[in-house]
Image (cartoon, rainbow, N blue to C red; front, side):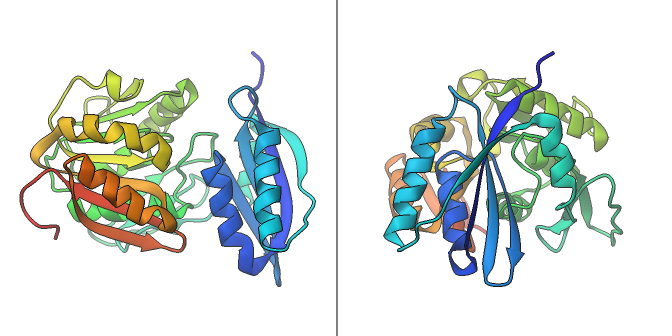
Length: 293
């Protein structure tokens, strides 16, 4: 079987600009990014799907244009990375991540010690998004911890590695439906569920998007997806919520807050709270009912 290939753009930027450039890469469709700090400089490696899924030349042009606006004329290197190379390279950078005081995400080769009430989500690096290292995933985990109550019905839209579904199940959600339009993500999510000893009765993983979800209503929906993908899904997601259900929208940049909250309101959802970390936000909205607590 042919190995799946990915494009990697590499560039060195001033450390003060690294967060902005990383956010741009995700905004332009990056499925993974690593950063190596060296004093006042940061080496960034941004991974993108191969053509035709990604217009790499267009991504390079846009990054060059945005860097020029900051007065930076930086070379952007390009290489093709096979899937097995990705996994080996990421191992060098992985460490346990405490998304909250209760939830830790860790790779299998680094064990963690837990206190009473804490949960560990084991995720090994694959090409599916969601290893706990990115702010948008951490914010969604924070929203999950704050909103979820045992026995709630949960939908994980764009599950990626399955990290949010695993955390939801470990926190007592029943049942959980996880969907993704990418076949490899679906396979990776099922693999991670098995590693975490989560049964298919607890979490069902399904290929597809909103159209694949006939069940409902859901008490909590998790959607860690870019804003341009989320916008047309707002009305369908509202229709999938229970009367007092909530939805956590992550994968959003701080500069998108005003526009996205307006879209949420137009979809007849009510913004409960906005969680923030670095350049990223998670908008928690509700259908109706009690206050966020």
